[in-house]
Length: 116
Image (cartoon, rainbow, N blue to C red; front, top):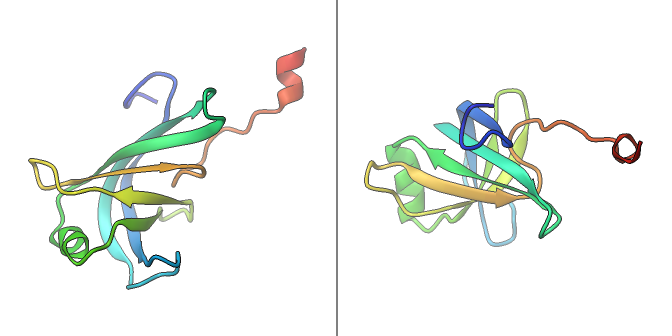
């Protein structure tokens, strides 16, 4: 857990991006990419927030330029999360962000353990 912050979970590695249409359904086939994302539970909003970046990829940039703004990020282990795809940064990679289920496993917390 040495990525963005000590209190965050993270994933770094290979992913498949599935472009999603406005209806939330896949609009194209998967695009292979490299990803580094991290997140944390937000006590202010009551949800899990995560963000990160995709390594430079001509296929991801082409999807962004064709209007793709929402993607499903899926890891080889099958974990997945829906993210917003942002315009390329100075290095050619794309920032991504999401809330809710992230594309990596997070520890489950039993609330009764916190009350003891």
